[in-house]
Amino acid sequence: ALYAGIPGKAEAGKIIAKLFSDKEPFIKTGKCPSPYFNYFLLDTLFSLGHAEWCVNFIKFYWGGMIEANADTFWSEFDPVAGAEVPKTSLCYGASGAVNIFIIQEIAGVRAAEPGFRKIYLNPMFSILRAAKIAFHTPPGRINLSWNTAENGDIDIQLDANFMLTVAPMLPKEILEKCTFGVGKSVSILDTTG
Image 1 (cartoon, rainbow, N blue to C red):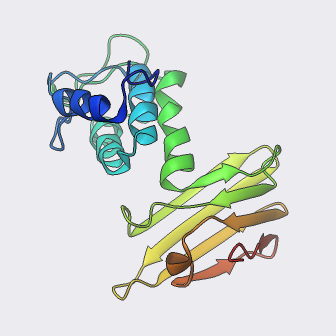
Image 2 (spheres, rainbow, N blue to C red):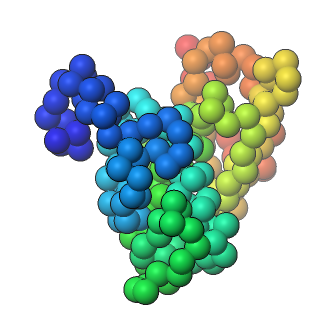
C-alpha cells in the first residue's frame, strides 16, 4: 500500500511507525527482507521523506553484508542472524539495486537529460558530512566527493572523463557554503537566478 501511494500522509506515517524503527534492525519484525524486496522498501521510504532512515538501513544491511566478507551482492542476507553465507546465489544482480539510491539519493546525482552528459547535483550534505563515490555512466566515469568543515563550508570535488555539465540543485544558503573543485572536462551551471 505504501509503495503504491494508497494511504494518505497521516495514515502512511502510522503504518511506517508500526513497521519500522529508528534503531537496528530497523524492521520491527526483526527479520530483514531480501535485498530484492529492500529495493521497494528504500524506494518507498526515500519518496516519503525518510532519507536518514534509509541511509542508516543501507549501512546496516549492505554494510553488514560487507562485514560478513561478501565481495559481491548476495541473493539473501540477514544482518540480524549474522554472517551465514546464503545457500543460493553469491552474486545476485537485483541485490545491487541499492546503488541506484547511493547514486541518486545520497550522492544526489541524476541525469538532467538523456545520455548523462548533463546532471543535477543535490547530495545529502545534512546526513553525510563526507562521502566519496565513483560510478560509470554511458559516456564515462564520474568521480564525486565532498567534505564538510566544522564551520559548515563544503568542499566538493567533481571530475569526469567526458564533457560533463553540472546543475547544482541546492538551496542558496547551502550553495553559498560550497566550493567546487572540478576537472577540466566539468562545467558548473549557475543555478542561483
